[in-house]
Length: 198
Image 1 (cartoon, rainbow, N blue to C red):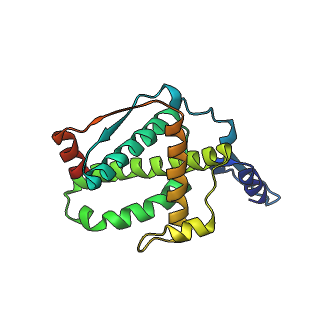
Image 2 (cartoon, rainbow, N blue to C red):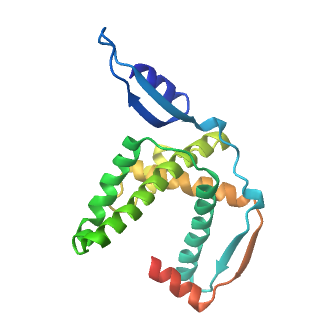
Image 3 (cartoon, rainbow, N blue to C red):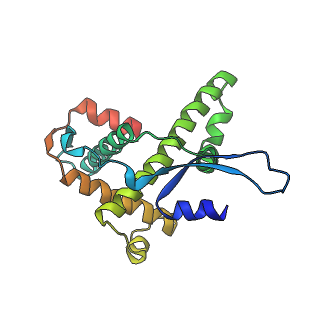
């Protein structure tokens, strides 16, 4: 396990871990598969077609800016597809299932199974994008200080959560600055759809 930790400190993300049958000596043989994050290609964001929807209402504009943010995350999710260790996904799912517990209790067995599949996909996406964002922050020299994270903490948010959120915002802002963004007024239907998703 010490060797595994050394590998991970060098910018790797565990993709799979499998323990083989220990030999007679009692030593544990561990097959560790990792994704070497620094080897990931730069995101082809320059060729991405991003659209910034606009509104004269400040509250609506904040919602629309979140949609532009989501476009970049969706693009990164399309570009970076690599396997994840089950333990990483399981850790993320603990919080997701805890948040959805009340909703899941109201579903039929079939609905619950479908919802669990969807929640698992969300968990995998979060883990993968979290790793990608951290690697891009390292690659582009984007940093968030503890003071920044402390100052930006929302109600009930931990410092680590604030740090992750700010890092993601800054990475996405950097990527948006690398591409041409078309702007146009949002339609009523588009605003309504975003409000329903929120």
